Amino acid sequence: MCRLLTPSLLPVISCLVFVAGLARAEGERAGEFDYYVLSLSWNASWCAVEGDARDADQCDARHDLGFTLHGLWPQNERGWPQYCRTSARDPSRSESDGMADIMGSGGLAWYQWKKHGRCSGLAATAYFALAREAYQRVARPEIFRRLPHDMELPAKVVEAAFLEANPDLEANGVTITCGDGYVREARICLSRDLTPRACAPDSARDCTLRAARMPRMR
Image (cartoon, rainbow, N blue to C red; front, side, top):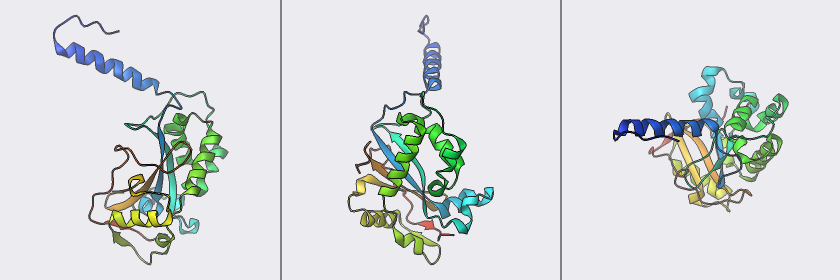
């Protein structure tokens, strides 16, 4: 416990920051969260902004990747847990690599487990299976796989396409993000049993650009 022996605010603030830092370092408890955010990344945008500079294999046209699984993130009504404490075994390299067909790389699957999957309270194999099920439940609009060339689109157009392809989704449960001038992700809010639900304010952060670039598939 901190002993506040002076009227000066500086020791008080320093003490509180120190204690808060210790709490963050310990990580949050696995399994304590309210819902999931399913994050789908438009692969061509990621490649244009980051992947090409890394010579990432998933940017090779032979993979034919559209919206890939960025992650399945445990989320709270306010804030979100990450890097949680868990007794669950970390996935093997082969288990992580087994997610590359929908995530683009085994390295991303491992990172997502470390940052988000540990917070699910599930074993790694169960978390990956749930993430795959969530990915398969949401229809990715086929129209974007047929773009004849790079386009400038308002986020609302991308959102509308997801809503049309998924009649069980509502507008307040879908968020389209952008970055560096590109459409980057579609984020779908799901209950813990993967039922569509509304996003809490922390997750509902739509792209505010008038239009963002959506490159055609590789």
